[in-house]
Length: 206
Image (cartoon, rainbow, N blue to C red; front, side, top):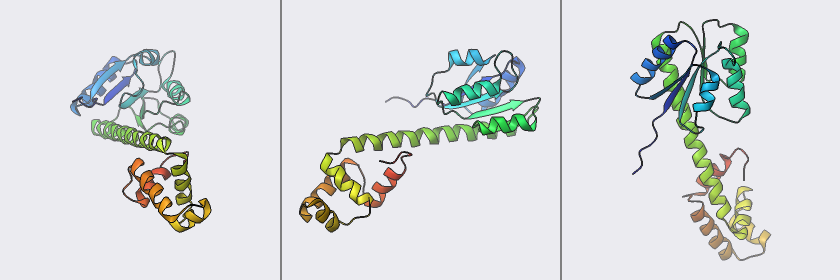
């Protein structure tokens, strides 16, 4: 049996002392830790899809934390970012949060504050991965439906009853019931409510 991948806290800061301090906190929470002295080092060492979070310093040589965050967002990488800075100001915090930063911490921050931020970011990441996996499974089940089953599904989503579907598709009520039973089995839904909920969870619908 394959063990689940342990969440990793990626720390990007050009100050080794800050790296060590954040690393100690992350390890105390039983997470893996990887440290980088620059944004470019992180980009070379990060494997997309690794569960975890990024603890990122705002002000660094070459590429700032804000620039790295924007690069990740533009590339479609959905990763909780804890932004930190010893020179925080309102515009900087607004920029970080508007680009999707999970939270913003001003140095020097308290260790309990950092622990809470990391724990919440990891929980958010794992929840997002679970949601994405569920959506992928629902899409795969939708693709497995036959055209006739999909026709019945579309009408069910419109709120049609079995009798109404039979009339609109010009088939017998028994045929509708058979197709409905098959599509429910393919979609692994125990009820119509569950089926509709699964499909409505997709950002792009059916």
